[in-house]
Amino acid sequence: NEAESESPLMTITKAQTAAIKKIMHKKYGDNVAVEFCMRYGNPSTKSRVRSLVSMGCSKILFFPLYPHYAGATSATANDQFFRALMKEKWQPSVRTVSPYFDNSQYIDALAKSVEVAYKGAYKKPEILVCSYHGVPRRYLVQGGDPYHCQCQKTTRLLKERLGWSDTEIVTTFQSKFGPEEWLKPYTVEEVARLAREDGKKNIAVIAPAFSADCIETLEEINEEIKESFEEAGGSEFLYISCLNEEPSHIGALCKIIEENLSGWI
Image (cartoon, rainbow, N blue to C red):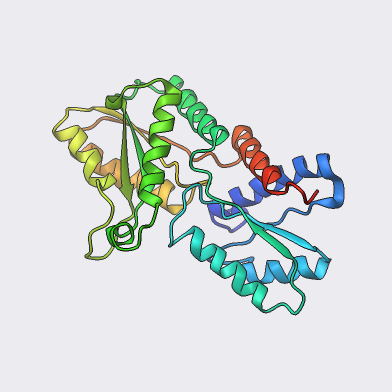
């Protein structure tokens, strides 16, 4: 966002927060404050916790906006939150929100975004690639991280919600770096294989693990991965935006928030 001199992630996060705040204020007035913080960057988790405690908040619900749990994402966000609380002499009651990879409203929002994108496509995609952020394979093998299983389940639930066959959708993983093996198949390799070996000329790619568009989606998927597909012989590449501040997404998040506030308001 050049006008505001900020990243797309920041712009979208602000819009999501404003939309959630509007809905929650309409239902609960000043009884519920809605703010955001960044795992990496500002406003930091530490500064936001300090601010909320200073405001007199006696209960804090912490919601990591990662649909899927991973030690490298949700867990580190929670760690940072609890480290911030350790600095407070007076600590409020706290809750953290569990991953929502199989939440029906989240799946419905994903399905709706796919249906809208397919309807407006120049040519109907032959297959939908669900590209999730990758993690080292050892996290799964050695540590029992549930991330891989949760990603597979989201794809399956999306497929069932759309009424599709197994041949119309596939799970892949992106953003690998370093020499060690990460979760496979790698998106950048799979899209090339689809074009070169399976003869797929028209594909769509969606990133269900991201609640908001960012560099990994806007540049890695829509530029690098698209280029890999086209160089292998593909022609039509459709990137389906993250759910961002779509009403169906905001509605799903608000429902999850309300469920987790049960007994507090």
